[in-house]
Image (cartoon, rainbow, N blue to C red):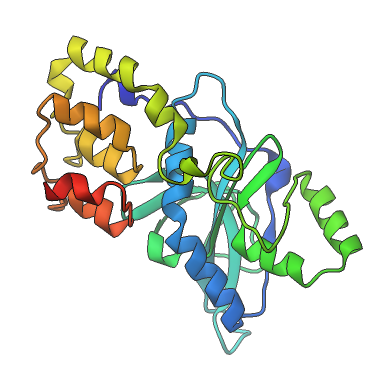
Length: 264
């Protein structure tokens, strides 16, 4: 995808390796659905984190349910565990398992994992010690006493804030506009325009999966960057190897501020 799209990765902290067994209740199912519905915000933040020279995230993790049928149990055993080093193609999430399973034997710490967005159970990122997402964690915290919450938060070493006011975007309380467009998308406009002027072959170039810059920016919800691509006559009809257009991704991920761009 060219020089502009080069990603910079970092390892997550070892002490964030948490395994959670939770009673399956309608409320917990709602937490799963909320995590899936808002995953676009998680990916947008991670997308820009990979482009920072100096990393800002304390962690960026996704919770995944793993299951296995073991002879000694009547029902499959399910463990919800965290993965990091996240990649996302608009449909599938790939990462590395951070946890050591308690009972499962079909997966182990460090294994590569690929799962559909519709199957995750949570996501969370932290900047400056303040968490975003963590829907299942906040549900568990809501049932704790104040002392238990303090002990829980201290064990993580993070500020989980108010369990009734889950954040999904950085500084959204002070800057609600961040819920629409990531500030880095707006701040990178001139550098991105300069990059395209110097590298015109990159505008519609495809990677091995058939993705162009437009696909990747649509997945991350970056309207300001897409507006620049439009100036350079990017191909709005380009399709991935699986036949997906950038418009398809914008609609699938419910980036409402992008949809009108593709309808003109």
